[in-house]
Structure formats: C-alpha cells, structure tokens
Image (cartoon, rainbow, N blue to C red; front, side, top):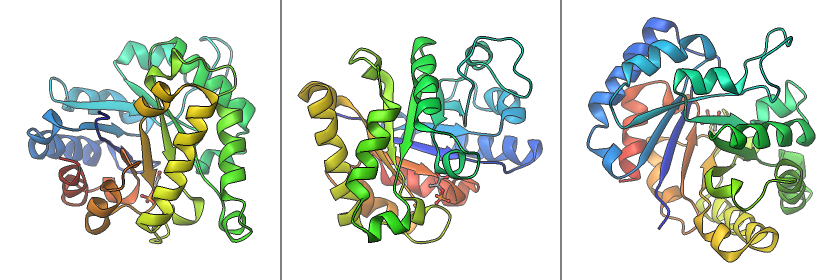
Amino acid sequence: MRRYLIAGNWKMNTTRQDGVALAKSLVEGAAAATKKVDVLVCPPFPYLIPVLDAVKDSGIAVGAQNAYFEAPGAFTGEVALDMLVDLGCKSVILGHSERRHVLGETDAIINKKVIATRKKGLQAILCVGELLEERKAEKTEAVLDEQMAGGLKDVTAEMMADVVIAYEPVWAIGTGLTASPEQAESAHAHLRKWLETRYTPDVAKATRILYGGSVKANNAETLLSQANVDGALVGGASLKAADFLPIIEAGV
Ligand code: PEP
C-alpha cells in the first residue's frame, strides 16, 4: 500500500522566526498523524538549518525546493545536493511550475536534477502539470507525457524507488482554483498508466502521485479519497499550522 505524503512547499516565504514557529507547531500538532502519513516541509534554503533543528526527532522530514545537479564547485548562487545531504534533508522538489515557467527550467535540466538527486539517495519530487491553455486545447495528457518522458529520461526502475510525482495543474497553483476530484483522478490515472508502460506494473503501483494546486482543509479529504491520489503538495495552505494540520489529518 502507498503511504500518503503530505508536503508543504513554503516557496520564498516566512522569516526565520516564523518558519521555526511554524515547524514547532507542526511537530506538536502532527505528532500522532506522522505515525500514519509522511509529512514533509520544504522551507527556503536559508531556513533549512533552523527548521531541521526544530523538527529534530519528530516524524516530520525536511526537504529543499530545488538543488543543482553538479558536484560542489564553481557554480555561483547554486546549492549542491551534497550540501542538502550534509544537513539532513530527505527530499528535493524538482521541476516546480514556478521553476519551469518563471525561471526557465527545461525538462533536460530537471532530468539532470532528478538523476543527481537519486544518486545522492535523496527523494526526488518531480512536478508535472499543464497550463490552462493546454488544458483548454485538450493537450493535458500530451503535456504530461512529454514532461514525464523528459524528466525521467534514463531514470531506472531502481531509482524510481524514491521518486514521487506531483501532478500540479499550473492553472490551479496559487489561484484558488482547484482541479475537481475527477480531473485530478483522471490525470493521476493517466500518469500511473504512463509509469506502467515506461517501467513495470510494480513501479506504477509503488510510485506515489501527489496532487498540488490550491489544496485546502476543505477540499483535501475529497482529493485524497481518489484512488490514484497518494498525497498532496501544498503551497499557500502550508504556511499556517492551522491550515496545514487539517490537510495532514485528511490523510490519516
Ligand atoms: C505549490 O506551490 O506547489 C502549490 C500547489 O501551491 P498552492 O497550494 O498555493 O496552489
């Protein structure tokens, strides 16, 4: 059985003080839930260390929102995977739509990051999702196929053991628009079929596919109840414990 993963993407938000306070509230509020669901928080790079300290010995894991694929060296402004391993991070979000569409990351770059992340033993959360115009033009599945093929090029079945897919329709991110449970399930079922064809039925069965896009306390349960939805990647609603804890609870 796939265990739910509820992940918070703090994006470029919080202060150190607020981030630590949020992490501490989650440790307290999610202590019981973490026995049943995986909980991950992904703060901005400068706050990884204080947040890691705040969740130490709790069931909450800490991840990064990005990383560079090269070994440490002359890459000004980048953060190496070795550094994240050194700190005790467990996971990296890769190919988020803001990195694709605001910062110009291509499938080829994302693919290098996925491979480097898995080679370092960290969990790779690969985000895929279509733009509104692509959905309107009925290109959703074609876009997902392309992003999956590009992002997972040369990623072996063994590496897939800790790859998580996050389906995040771009039109639903930070907009308050959520995919309907049927739209989410249809995309997730398509992604699982893709995994079955590209890999094996076992890989498809074991790989978690998260939904992301304006997940809130009031829609989390319905989304999570869909057969192929194995968790949530949450942006805005992960910034307050009062908003995020009920989403975690929805997975219990
Ligand atoms: C995200 O950042 O991945 C996201 C889904 O954001 P929001 O929940 O705010 O739509």
